[in-house]
Image (cartoon, rainbow, N blue to C red):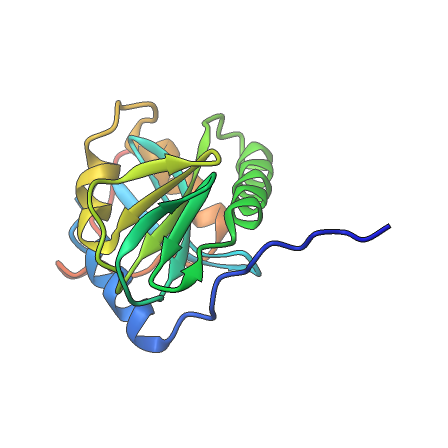
Length: 171
């Protein structure tokens, strides 16, 4: 029996990481914490008052177009939907171990592609890097800042914010 393996996403470059980190630095440092995670299917986790997000970087160049049940960027089919969803489930398990009960949204972040509005495809949110901070920050509040901070620290080393050292939150 032959198994179908869908296209995967390309390995992100250092420039892709820099672009996403700059976008994450636009989040409020008192209510959001970004963590570089060691997962083969996602590069970053964001935990904050609007929940948790597992973010995978897609560094393909070109225009984003619908293609069957997925997306195409230029000539390449966008893959990695299932893998980033699995990374979100693994992150959810780590959060449960840290006594943080919140849904983890899987996200594919387009760092170079020309795309329109963010959309959900196969249960994964696909958004431009320019929209990351506004999309994450505009969600409904589901966690208090102290819980989000403890969860981020349980997941890994919290990245420094662009506005300087992290402020201390009351616990």
